[in-house]
Image 1 (cartoon, one colour):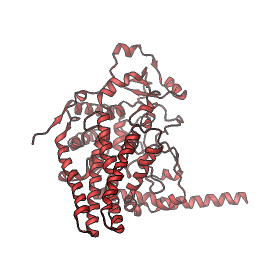
Image 2 (cartoon, helix red, strand yellow; image 1 turned 45 degrees about the horizontal axis):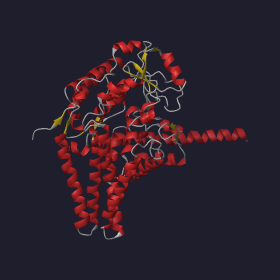
Image 3 (cartoon, one colour; image 1 turned 60 degrees about the vertical axis):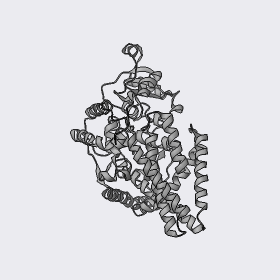
Length: 497
């Protein structure tokens, strides 16, 4: 069958802010100190392609949520912006916000605010051994690879791949309906129906993920509305919440204070830094390492799979919290209606199950078996680095490779992982259609090899073992923490008495 590929002309060459050299020269210069002072005065200044862009009037309109912008204030976000957005956004939209030319100080830094206390973005977590990497050379070669992929049409979507995906979605949906509506009234029937539903939700999540990254049509509004129809109507989860959460995750991957995807107290702590009851810039509150957190974290390696069985219920809560309470919910009304449609059809389907115990069995199986998706998601980051060896100089490419792992699986099993097995490639090129990530992996491995970056990959089983061992390592430190706290309390009590 010939492949039906639609090439987006806008992606045919590397993105660059469409500003003539003459206009660039006429913009006022902005030095590092001037940049820092203006940020202190309340301006949201982001460096993109050598230009200082003032985004105060844009931050609340950003489709991916305000935090994805705010975390880039005072930093060179060229690679983050070009990797996450279609070329026309960089070339045609960003010039509206350019207010100055950035005059670098020769330090080759990408961040100029790590020592500043910003109310909306914490300084990047620092620590670990010096990386001894040439970040400038890594950045240069990453940009060359990005330009090559654009020039060779890698960002064009092959719709024939989604024809096969669609057949799988329909098959799982029909199987679940047939078992519930026509199958014998037994526990085995409804358990099987629950498994089919869980697999359907897993597969649809991969498709919604593609749409959230504008991988299908390249047009934000079309892909987002399609994503709402898929995730909200068929899965009961808010795409708007996911997009806000996920874009933040891509910008500040595995950062302790800023990345919501690793902020799971009281159940999990992927670093002992969470023992410090740190402030989450995403949730806007302190993540308390209280008695409940100490208990769960001390057992997190043993409770990991059990907690994952209930993770989908947490996503329902997060979705409704976002839709009802978030200040940023551009499609709030549409999403509430679509999630309401999900509740209606799913409740109607459950009503065909004859007894309450069997209904509970089906609902629990469908949601608990969704644990496989949450395991796939957390596997890529939970055991990876959470501290940068050099937050001021570490470039986008090096940070994504440091914080992410790939999962090895046979080609015929790619459908089961939905592109998540190529997580490093996805984080480097978020808009690259997932069916092409495997073709890009050798290029990324070569980039890592040439620059001495560790490319971590495990089989699915070994990845689970690696993650569980890391969670166990952190869990073992809770006992030491508790002893230290008791000694501290005793010392304070003796002084008071």
